Length: 226
Image (cartoon, rainbow, N blue to C red; front, side, top):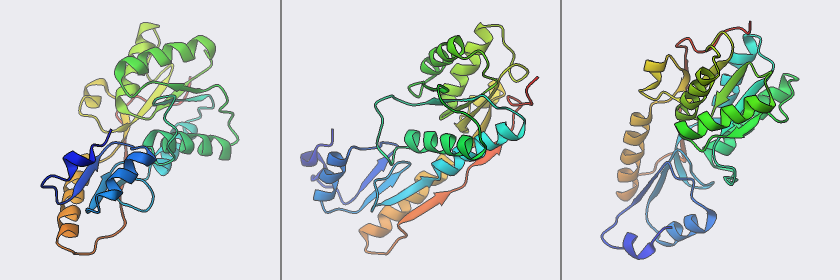
């Protein structure tokens, strides 16, 4: 939880990195009346630096669909994450929207991987137990995608010959696993957000939103279904 007493002590501005805060927590920060910048997950009406999570998800799903995949699963985050500005929620929305617009059924194809390798591995196992027809998976983070790859290997399935996998982030470990990903430049986002916060502290106007691009990096974990 946000502690307003701590933040009031010698603080000139607040930079919130990667935390989709609840509405009451955002209200606490607003009550400080200090310059405020969000990185990655910003509540509406606040300066935010990040990526277009909906468009990123749609591009990932489009890549898989264009290869010929029909049963495209989605590994999302926490099941209780329902904030509309959460990256996990927005990426899930993008997955559903692209599937729907292409006339592809998505019911029963979403699992929750808790944004880590272990969760991605367990959720992929659970998914394949009930949907062995899945030929591709889009994970909302590279760590979950890595877990999915491990689960597929556990079952003797080949990536990408049997099941294709794509993640989001551009995690440095992804290259070692040959993981295709929608890469983002987190470093530049942080630098930009910090610079904007300093400008706000000095009274310089800044844009409400800065959206960084994501780029599909194809490392070989996706291919047409056999």
